[in-house]
Image: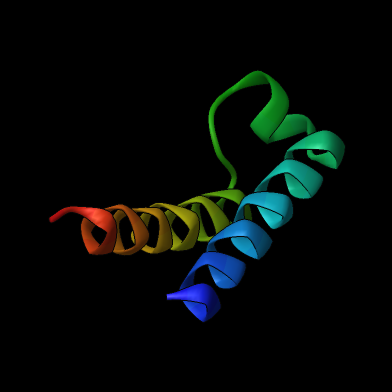
Length: 54
């Protein structure tokens, strides 16, 4: 579970980093790279949150 959490946090950081420098993601939705990063983040977040449920 710890490995999953670490991957989830790295994915969140990658999205934040990308968004900070991408004019498309900042203003008009997501560019293809931003969308790929965000989808990866969403999958990892869902997996982590589902693993925490009793």
